[in-house]
Length: 265
Image (tube, rainbow, N blue to C red; front, side):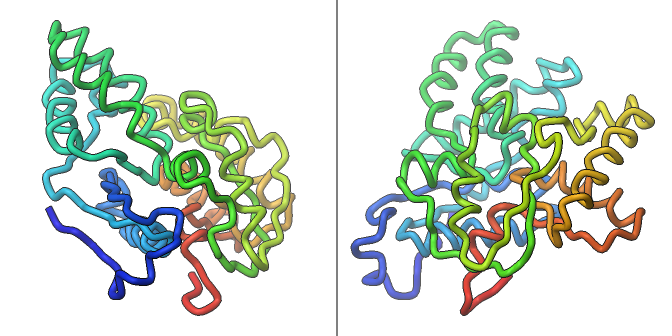
């Protein structure tokens, strides 16, 4: 485990995260394909006064096994998650999908394989595992994080964050407070983008059709960037936007919030 701390610890005095140590759950896809998102979360939380720890023992949350019915294979990953993160007051993840899996599926997996002890441990840890916008708004009590992003943007609420976690308008509260940003309303925002992990593999034609609908609505807003809290969905939407040569780019919520006038995204 490594602890990431600001260069000047005195700068943390009076900040909303002062005295708070937070574990970063980076998630597989961010670690492998979108490392800038994890860097942005760290930068943002440090700016707000938190001390960020990154447990190297962390691995997959097991969502892929769970969603395809392999409960026995997922159990070891659930066990590993509890062992890695149980000591922390809060675990923050830049992913509604993986946070939703931990909070809504881990206890189910433990019970399905008959491990009641693990189920109790999961039940104690799960409420402390938060998606980034939940942590910022509900725990730190902030919506204006000092971000600067002078671009036209629109926000796509991903399915797990919207339906499983119920993050509501927390991401929008944060984006409305970003200096310089021109936030455009996304038509049919609550419609799924069609990614869905294994769904996109088993039903590729449906997945692409749903993604094309989402990409069309993004273009209709006139936005330069589409923002979301899950890079998996952004990869799907972004691929279709690129294929259509729209010029619209994708960016994770954390990267917008970490951006400042001195250090822009």
